Length: 393
Image 1 (cartoon, rainbow, N blue to C red):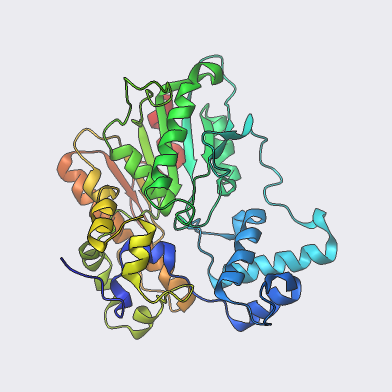
Image 2: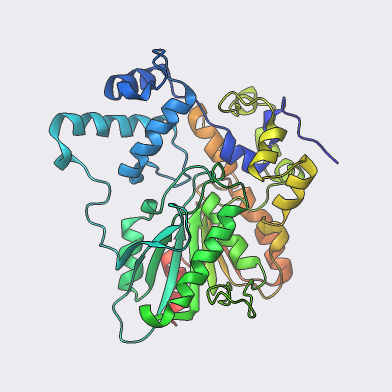
């Protein structure tokens, strides 16, 4: 068994990259945070730690979700500065100066509980129609440790509703609350719950899709490419509902998470760049990448963690007869790594090479797959066009 070398930061498994590795804020940001939020220094030592800084930004991100431009649930230093400016402006001018999503439509049903935990909730907007409507479910990103259903983009919501497609956005438990694969199973339960309400909510349960970015994309692909998980003989009527999807759309999705997969797809992009190999630094003082990977997957050994994780990666689960997928990435095969160190990490872990790896597999299986990136010619110009074609015709 190949073991992760924690000294070589170029080739950590994908989930460790996303969920555990973060860039520290620069000193300017920390000074601004302490000025705006002196209570952020919870231990009163006058120094803002990594965890104290992240707690502030995750709370702020709920109020300013559009600051996360690439919707990966991880704020770059530039995005953090934007949020700080917005908060500073709000402090001067009052609450009316800014808003999270002032033009967003009010959900038909908000914070519907599909489980007992406070994060096991979703919002749903029902399209106005005399006949049952398709449903598109948004699953947020954030490395399985951050993010919120509030990150659903207002324009996407409006376009889908205008097209006659109902929309839902779910929360799920972070891995610190319940180790992976709990987040995946939460999404499964939410999907089945919504199908169980099809009659009440005028939903066509035969036309259901999911969409999301980064960690959310991983969950979306698992639902799309996993055999039906319905349990027809269950005493729980929700468990008897199908989990199969009509189609799925992703943004910046990680299609595999094994060490070998990342060496093959992302390794060549790193080259011998010292900057590239130094951007990935352990978070919260954790120096043992293997230990954190084990903890995230609720395993006892690295081998057990890797075996479990492998069952949830798209490259392993996709098979013939699976639903169509529309993948979007912000980089092209020929794009150069950003010189800005704060952007390099996001560029690597959301690179289009990840999409090409899955497209090669889907093509071999004759599963319909569309891969959009800068300069690519695709049948569909956007997720919305894809959903309209697959769900409404």
